[in-house]
Amino acid sequence: MTHLVAIPTGESDDPAMRAFIGPTGLLVEGEPSGPLAGTTLAVKDVIDVAGRVTGAGNPDLAASRAPAGRSAPVVEALVAAGATVVGKTVTDELAYSLGGDNEHFPPPVNPAAPDRTTGGSSSGSASAVAAGVVDLALGTDTGGSIRVPASYCGILGWRPTHGAVSAEGVTPLASSFDTIGLFARSAPLLRAAAGVALATVAGRPVSPSPVERFAIVAELMDLIGPPGTDVRDALEGAVLDRFGAAVPTIRLGCDMDECLATFRTLQGAEAWATHGGWIRSSRPRMGENTAYRFDAASKVTAEQVAAARPVRERVRRAVHDATVGGTVLLAPAAAGPAPVRGEYGPEAERIRADTLRSTVIGSLAGVPVVVVPTWGVPVGSRHLPLGLALMGAPGTDLALLDLPL
Image 1: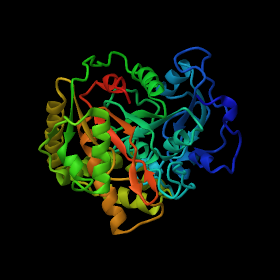
Image 2 (image 1 turned 90 degrees about the vertical axis):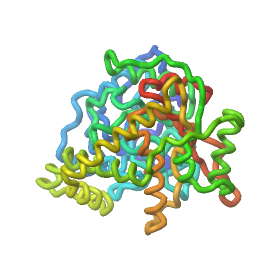
Image 3 (image 1 turned 120 degrees about the vertical axis):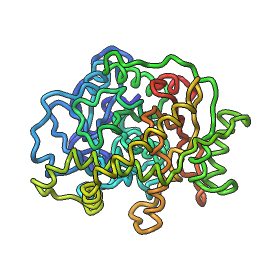
């Protein structure tokens, strides 16, 4: 655990502190007893913390808002369990990116590979945990925004079953996909914190089903290259080390290009429904990439949404059928290690699209995913992190987190 005095207070020139928006310090003190007593917590700046403005990565939105009168229920629950909030973390603008940068803030540092991106949109939360500045950090995941930064930074990440953690007090992006999850370096701590977070939704069914078997998802493995390539060999080696040689490979029967297009259509329509009125009336300053995404979102038609919904249901059924009876699906958490920071162009866009292809199955299906670090991918004289994603049936969050991670 990180002792509280190790948290720098006020402004800091420490690169690790670029994970945070504004000064750090004791924002909300945790209860002295409880399963998380003595731990430190950072909170992505789309989630309310009492007394702090939630800006969602956009300075004009922040300027239009008063400080939150109370913390989001998930923050309150973690504080009641003993975690002390020490800072709000940088997010990609309005959480509408996987890139890990925001034109309004210096980019958070990836401690595992400082020349490479953290991934986003929960960029600051992943950076703070990976740097050892905090024990836990809250993030959100719509299309991979916990899973990808966890993979790139070499830490644990948990995207919960959709709706299993309260979204009250959280600035939404696309509500039918948005989830509120956590980063940690310690598996027991992540399990304890997840149990607290899951209790924020009263009466939410949680499956007690134990894990019975594992299966590799062929369509998702194919995204990282054919057998014999460095990335594919690294992930297959990680599966072998953790689960043995007898893990079967299955096909979900999903067209990955169709899945990506479906997710982008539905996410875009919801994102515009959430923020479009404010964007049109306020004309906020927005980064070029964010503005481009919202412009595309504004053009999604009702007919396109109607055509996308049956595809989403087919994906949901395919994943649910594949995970029935305690099967956990194994796949890459991203399409490869973190890209070099600041590189743009066709190759960067291809990597981003392939990474989205690797994450949208879980988003469309609304299932829990836990990302665990592996030995990584050899690149020159070093190994770069690459996460292994463990995907379960809806409600099996705790069963996944009870595995030896």
